[in-house]
Image (tube, rainbow, N blue to C red; front, side):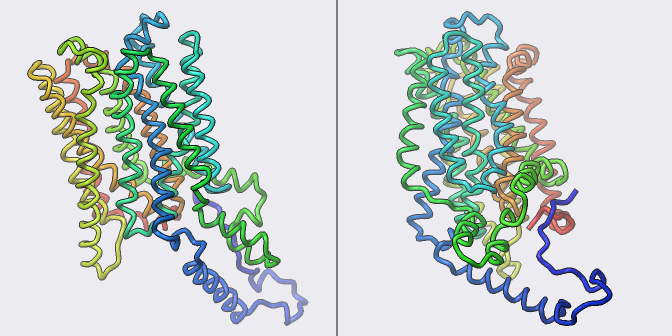
Length: 498
């Protein structure tokens, strides 16, 4: 099923009445004029100073940094309470370990749903107020978590907070795509990815000590304060970056309605029909593009494993290594070290590989030139899992499993970056493509912690992580190689790609 297109051409000759005025017949010269006018409009836009690609670098990077900050808050809130799960269970009288895990992972279920709405809305109304509105709602729902009187209300507010916080995760990639061209967006994409990946690491480090000394509700006070600070910076400093919305707003203020119609299809379509087209686009991308599905599935698998660690770390390091809640939060630093090193190394690797392969192709880059960096990163994921799992099972020095998580974190982010870049480079609607990937990713991140403790109880840390490493090998290595060699042909047959 292809996406509806807005036709701008005039009717064909055969569809005109038999008796006709020769002056009204659209001939080749008129069509040529229309085509030339369209090309002229596009050329003007490429050099227009209000085009986000032409903004001053300081303005671009200010927007990118603020989007990264918005994107950092949601993942930080998702895991900040991880070290204090035992205390939370005591506070609300929870005795079922699955329900205890649910208080953490319920936040991730709406992260699978929200992007399917937030990203299309950002492509209809613009990125800016979708981001601001979600951040302010997120602030309010986290206050609800802090003041929840029982487990049921706490889980409800966690769900609502996750839904509100899903917008930056889905729209952030779209903003990066708006601001930076294919050849120079790797660094900005790496900055954006710091939020979804480093946020869940910073959260437990902060949350462990606060919960131990002040109480678990202070974790949510801190998240609320950070959301407020982000709003105070973002609302005055950020500007709309989605080109069709910018062009539509400018054209609506001019008397040239034809120019406005060519700037944004919503100008000539029923708004509800246009909104429906945008809302269903992520589903279409995920179900009708094998490339989008398989890359999203691999990203979802390793992200699910990542969140599985948040549920199992407290038991492992408190029961096996006898760490307190506060010190237990520091064990997440291994993942953070892996992410930081991958951010530095992965950006250079991805950029150098892309530039090298593009130079060999006459200076023309292709999305498949992102894949070698993905293959490189995917090799580290199973290594890190095996190292972490078997060293934990052997109960050797606590630094050994932490080193394993650092290797896993390095592989995770090194693989994440080229996947995000590939989706943005390939699909016409970047926010919808990344929303589809984010939905599947968050769904597995929600599900994995719910069965993690049962899996490790049956297989222990070594066997359980060996199973996960095997899945990472089966999905993460052969399919990227296949995409590298056959992706271009598949893209050429799809109406969803650029």
